[in-house]
Image (tube, rainbow, N blue to C red; front, side):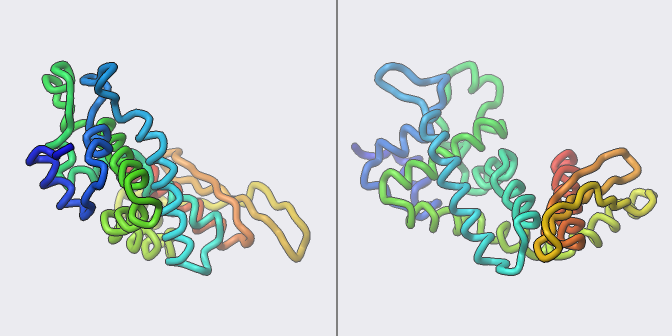
Length: 229
């Protein structure tokens, strides 16, 4: 199977030449255009979500070896969420090559976060099926690279960032409350809630009070910033 010109250019943009081009065609085919002989990208999306998750988790684990699980989790969630996948898709021009039915074409499907994010995951799965995990991971690291570095750097002092967010809006300082402590003295687990004047709050659990506060602050920042995207 020979790729059309737009898909040939797209595979050059993402840096992967498909040995099985039909996988890429399927990855960019939305259900609004699918048929018995033209499968949609929904199954690939399911697989790509898992491949993306493993690649991002692995990268975060390596990027900050001192981070606790409670610190890594909000960074992970920010990097794999739909809006981030859609932003990456826009950067590589994925919307331009989506195969959509007339209804989606008429309603701006090429610009919708849901369609772009799902298709980006499907493309990752297509690379995985075409060449294995390492090329798929390399693809994720190329396309998400700066975001992975920024997530680790930004999260190292999330409390300061949240404080700046609140002060910039004329609010009082965020309030941190230990709502649970469990485990033995040599291996404690703290659950901390942080709350701002708007009533927005987030919780996180970690092996120290400070780490739990940082993780809770990052989780709340991710939510607040996501609402403003």
